[in-house]
Length: 282
Image 1 (cartoon, rainbow, N blue to C red):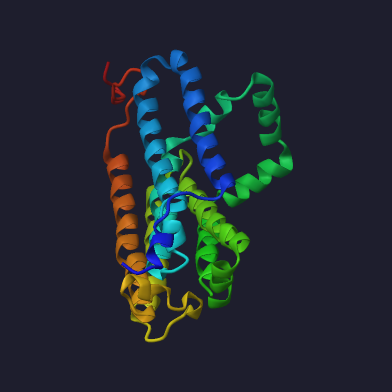
Image 2: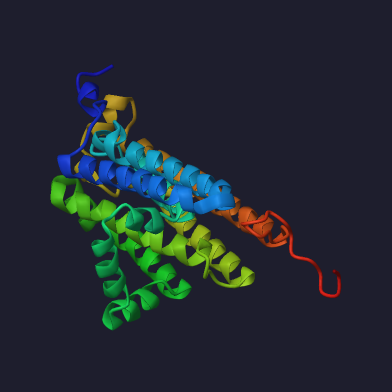
């Protein structure tokens, strides 16, 4: 192990990142505890959503507060693993966890009423409806991914911690919008959802292939960082491209299969656990 590696293997993050992670988890737990007596037979689905949220939260913490974060400043492949954790692991799981309800219930009643009024404020409601339309969310996610990988912006993020934080936010929040548009309760028709997943798999895979097959280093700002991990800079870039291309594409295939299973499964009443009866049957 080289002398540079111990610095890249430390745990932790900026205080505000840790505070946001802790607050999101505590609010979810507190809100779920308040809702629990009211849920009745809905406790099973609530536990399932909590499991999704908890797993997504762990993936987000692994991306932002584990050795991946400092390693990403030295190794492009580590940076890609970090971004994939945020965009294709944490984001869909957090969406499936539906955290808004528990978060709101964790707040005082007066705060909940104020937020409710704010959500229905027309400019906000119109904006939210616009950006959560599937095509809008797809375009925002597409733009964020490709723009931030432009060499000038990507290398600026490597040199400036504030820009780096904006980069992470610009990957996570558009991914949340995309998965909300595809997996949310008001998601598109099955065919359209599959189309959005397929085209996202294609354009993310194309970007990964550009990195994996390129014969030139896109981000010289990494300098000799990859050497500390036994990789040449070009090998590091090619490995990062493969991470985005192969596992990244597989995640969208898995999401598509999961959606197919959801559509094919009989719809159940979440309160009684029974399937709806066919027309004409008692």
